[in-house]
Length: 213
Image (cartoon, rainbow, N blue to C red; front, side, top):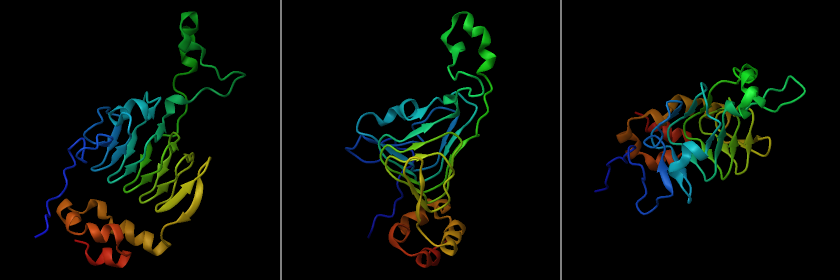
């Protein structure tokens, strides 16, 4: 009889003997970062430093939201709104952060306009050293190619690449995308997902629909 026990989303290192892979939900501590079950980061150096090395300039209040079952390749970076500089005057240099009497002008860099939260859907795959800029929304089932710099929103089930990232192709036609979003397999009970992993990974949309709970 096959073992139908589901995997454990609370284990930091889900792959025995592979410390380079971490599940992000049990790792993150920042209240500004939200990650769904089973989304993981892979890095041979120190994947546990994800909040420091991979989420940059995260001073708030904007949040980083990552859905369930996302795969983040080595070196993925999320640049948050704190990286912004003032651009409406002759200089973009942030004088007040240098201290001294310049700090009296901190109002010049506080409250800069932002694009809101950075939101990643479910089942998104990020390639090696891809980068996501502030306020971007990436749809369910999307793929971000290695080295891509995502500056605009990415539609569901779309492959993007390049700098700035542009759509390369869609993974499914509009009707199938709509059906996949309706099925939302990532929200199925974990026991049901476990029983139908092969269909989720390699089946057709019709086969997926046939096993929906």
